[in-house]
Length: 99
Image (tube, rainbow, N blue to C red; front, side):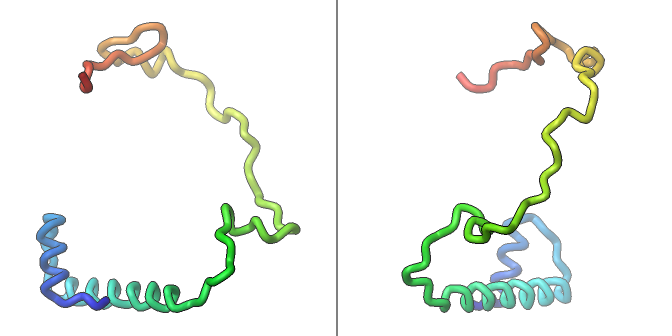
């Protein structure tokens, strides 16, 4: 798949973006380069390869460095809700938007 300048102009119009011609040409080149990479990936034979839930699922010796799951900020619910127009039982009250 290769984008033309008219495609970039149409996409910019739909996104309500004003794009000078030089920037549009640069964007077209970058997007076409991206599509070339996607085509290369699609050309790889993946027959018999099981999908992974996580990229490190097949590597046993990899340990992910995760931070501890602890609260790092104090609870300031009351202070944060003082400027709210309506609060009940610690929850913000908002108008119904779905009927």
